[in-house]
Image 1 (cartoon, rainbow, N blue to C red):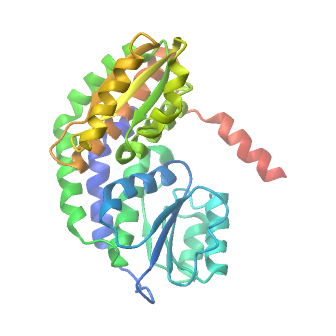
Image 2 (image 1 turned 30 degrees about the horizontal axis):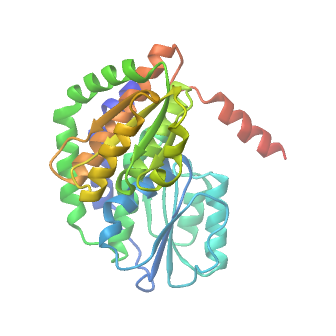
Image 3 (image 1 turned 90 degrees about the horizontal axis):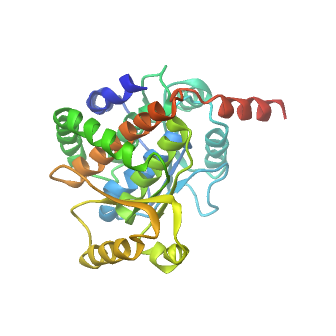
Length: 327
């Protein structure tokens, strides 16, 4: 897994080149709604895309991690089906749902059944490199989804330059982030990580949780502020030494959110096993968001090494897929 994480900055640059060289069939109309459907790394890619562009969108945007689409989807809806393997059953079912509802469809995939369907329908499609663990290819998924949205006229092209700058920043900061991940792993390894962020970083928090789950074979959980201040905070009234609260921060907090983070941390000190704050690096939200993704990926493999587990192994997930295939 180390080699895949190491080349994450290069993956972002390669994803940009793939998008630049893709020839697109035209969409029949301007979308009035957008839905991105996918699971795992493809699904979290959609949440991160929403974080990057959500405040600048003039059309409704939804993410779906399931078999069916919302019933409000219609011919004015663009549905982006994102599946690394191209054979994710939930995404293929959502594709058929989109087709039945008359939606416009675009795809991001390496191949499989989804690519067959996309080619048969002459659909806008980003074909990304295969042969890697899907969770290590979130950069390809994010860039592919953004490229489709630009093609559809939903967003402008300025994301490309910001993504390129973020990739170069990660390349220069990689060793520092790895060192930070090693220190952070030492802090949280004895505990169950509970990762807190604001809405802007909610996709990153879920990415941390998923990577810790899959790579380190550890339980981890996530929640967002201010919502957790209306419920989960009460769980710390009785101290729980099993948990480590990890707060992900960036430079674009609303002033009231800054106060909330400070006060929430103060209230949790001495109640959780440890309380840690992680500040994003970089000059803009793209650099900060991707620096946290990169840091979380390194953290997950550092935890895996400390626990003596293989970060690549996902046998239990394959067992479930096999059992579902028999039913």
